[in-house]
Image 1 (tube, rainbow, N blue to C red):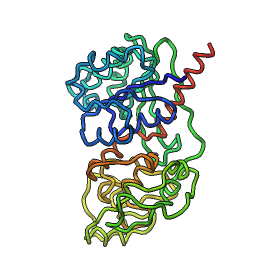
Image 2: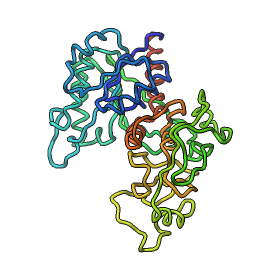
Image 3: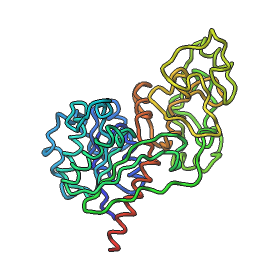
Image 4: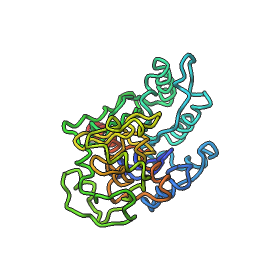
Length: 357
């Protein structure tokens, strides 16, 4: 299996493809429309042809046609909003779902042996499964058999309750089996306890490790890295620091007096992460205690970009670039690489079965 080449669509910073790279795949070409995020993708992978453009403006044949017959796999997570509206049956041709069409078109153009599409869990259940059925019909017409399931990152070694729908397609009439769950779970403290205990506003873009790894997970995260990147604490306001000081470990806004309780559309606001548990889903606003359960288990601040990256299973050798807002988008919108690697290993297992036949 020396020829494991792939295409990465709607790539983001590349969490999905990183997991496949860790399993032995090589990205030949990737597409991402956000310039700053695409730049971070490229800085972590010097040999990838990154096409920075809106996929709807790309000539599919001219851009991807040269890879026909040379690609094992196409991966991507096309954004989708239109399939979940109640009372109306939406289709892949709905304007808000049209980006799916481009994923399908690339698969049709290059005819890979496999493809992996990931998305929100509702993708598989919206409109009583109609949307899933329509996707299955489209890919069946192209000669693929799909297996679609919701996977939770925590079941594959990631210290996070992040659920994503995965659709694995295989050319032919047999399915790829989904990866088997791991028995043991990784906690938040397993992931971040070795990182510097910064106060609000402290930290530098590059710093030293302060202690040896304290868990097997940390050893994996630190493999090949001699410095810590992106570990800078949010500089919280005086009123925010007053609130945080009132909240004990495993506590939340119930410990705040009425005058300190703020209205929010988010759950878990002003609540500390539980060091002995997995995290809630990391979003793009994890630097703000009022945006969810993102307050450090013990320190009076929100988690840093590096702590969030650890919880997402990005190794310390993977660095994030650009503004803080961009870095949070890079981390918060990514597929956890460790989850992606589990899916990649499932495909490799299927490939081995085909060789044995």
